[in-house]
Amino acid sequence: MNVRVGLLAGLIFVAPAASARIYKGEEAAALRCANTLAYTAVLLSQADLIGPDETKVMLGITVLILEKHVTGTRAEKKSALAIMRNRRDVTQTLTDYQTNAAKCLVQFPIN
Image (cartoon, rainbow, N blue to C red; front, side, top):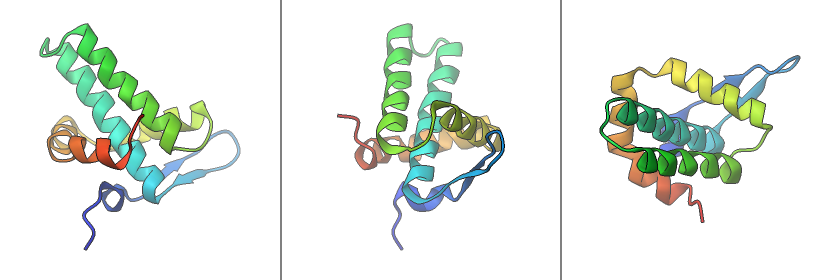
């Protein structure tokens, strides 16, 4: 069994205006990685465990993953991230970060 993050992501359903957008496979995995990095950055920043510079770097990586590895409009991507965020609690997100952050950067390069 391939343990790539892509297989862990499942499907993300996004409902913009009149039609539904479904992300699957690599794009769903990229969304999950982006969500994990962004959510973790915000949590660590709120807990004063990282500073503003580290927060900006993590959020910047999130944006680059979305730009380079996920199709759709900015609104569709934002909606997909909100859906992902609402499906994962803090513990699940931090576990994802500890387990998959390094894999995310390999699977979804930003440079």
